[in-house]
Image (tube, rainbow, N blue to C red):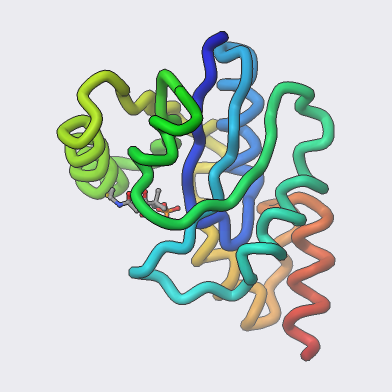
Length: 159
Ligand code: PNS
């Protein structure tokens, strides 16, 4: 079985992430979305909230599951016996960050490669951090995130 892991902060999941999942779920037998606490980023949503929002947003994808983990990504990949890491690419500015991570992971776990998938052009501008900033400042993000995320953002920002 070809199992791939799609790791990320997903704070929160966006339509861009879902586009990547819709494409890759046709290529792999199974995908596990691995929600990670990124020590370099301050999160708006807890890990549990992010997992729940993803579950609600991907119910149309039968072969995609969600989990969270802490620690080194390659240890998780090894434990799951996954054959690939999935990452989305939007613009050239993503490349440096992504290439460094991919080479680091390749060095730590030579048998597994990172597969990059290009976003649909209409989603290129969407990022979780942009969505959060726009929502906090009162912008309409309904075209950028799935409905459960839009609702949760409104709820969270009321608090
Ligand atoms: O969505 P993000 O924040 O760009 O995802 C980055 C993430 C979480 C995939 C990356 O930070 C990661 O893999 N973290 C786990 C810790 C790890 O393995 N670090 C070494 C690889 S760079």
